[in-house]
Amino acid sequence: RRKARALAWPPASITLPNISTKDDGAVEASEYFTVTLSSITNATAGDVTAQATITDNETAPTLSINDPAPVVEGGSISFVVTLSAARASGAVVFDYTTQDGTAIDGAADPNDDYTTATGTATIAAGATAITLTAIATKDDADIEGTENFTVVLSNQTNVAGAGNDLTGLATLLDSDAP
Image (cartoon, rainbow, N blue to C red):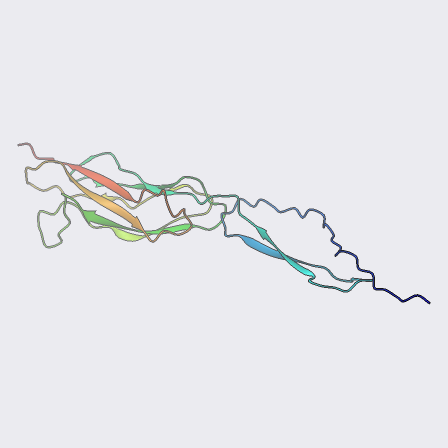
């Protein structure tokens, strides 16, 4: 009489067919999906679930604001904010505000140089630029040199974390002859 012996085979493995992903053109975080084996016969199921990761191949665009051409005091000046590439989905939203340089905005000062501008702007999905509302400059009677102020962007969404140019410089030319 022979004794029965347990026979052991190395764990079996299977290779699933390739699962294609779709390049959607959207800048997004990694995405995940799960593959689950079911209807297993003639075997004892172990771990039947695996998670796959789809790593995005698009990079977020950068945001920049221009330094417009100088304007003679009394005129208006506009800043253009651009993206390095259009977003397929998801708008870019940011705040903007003016900051004094040698030009000042002093509501109580009759010799102030420009009107403060502050707000929130949006560049829609598919677009690459927006022009901010024109900022009025004031023509004073002072004989002075060239002055400047900046527009600073902040709190931006859906853009790269680095490589952004978030400050635009406005230059005001004096309208009064010495």
